[in-house]
Image (tube, rainbow, N blue to C red):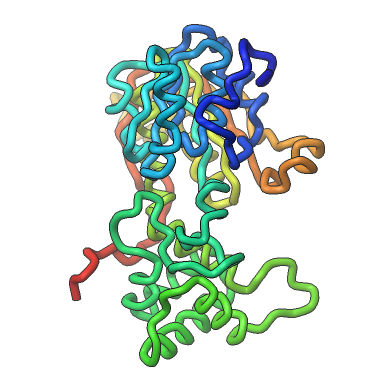
Length: 339
């Protein structure tokens, strides 16, 4: 049985390769679940959705990856009365919900399904096309590394990957691609390793942070997360819960900053006595919650996960101001085929 709820529905739609992280903690955060309407903004292999359905919830599950939607077709058919499966970005979750909901859960980042498919190009554990597009549309990672200037690549690697050799790697890419464009994951990974080197005490491959940065940039993951938080603010009813699981510091800082901002009342200048500060739209419940040692032993990918939870107040949503997050200026994406 899943998380102690209802009948076991794990087999519906086939086995899930992705192990949902902090499943019991998310279930507890969103209670009561029976007859509740919950948005699962990151459907993936359906781990959270299965738990929610087993608990008796109605689920609006969203994913921009067409493969995830196709894989969830059997589950959607089996629970047609309680599951609405939507193909699209979770930044539009309020539009897809259409009305206020009791909870929103977001599991941020790339899924095991995507990482484990060489043809998607998210990982260099096996060779594959340098793609990384979650929606299978728009510019690919190969487009980015073969077309953007050195300075743009360095900013992407430096901020989104927190790569200390960002400038060196960007210069190497610019020089190498003039002779032979990068089209495969292992080609890029090997070129980075040969250029930067790898010490015997290095715990991760030298290309890891660059691949992370490219994936986040190609999919605008940080912007999507920020817009999804604003959408959740608009979608949640008073008392509704927001539960967000993140896997690295860039994501966690966005969620932490959003909850801190929305659970406090901004100060108003004493020179503007008639100005009323916007009221708190969320109440912080807890966070960050980390996985147990037992869960990490079963699923090593859970080791960096953090769960933050907040409850919606009755106050109207504030304006969606992206300036809240302090994003640096990064190059804009382009239309494939354009020069």
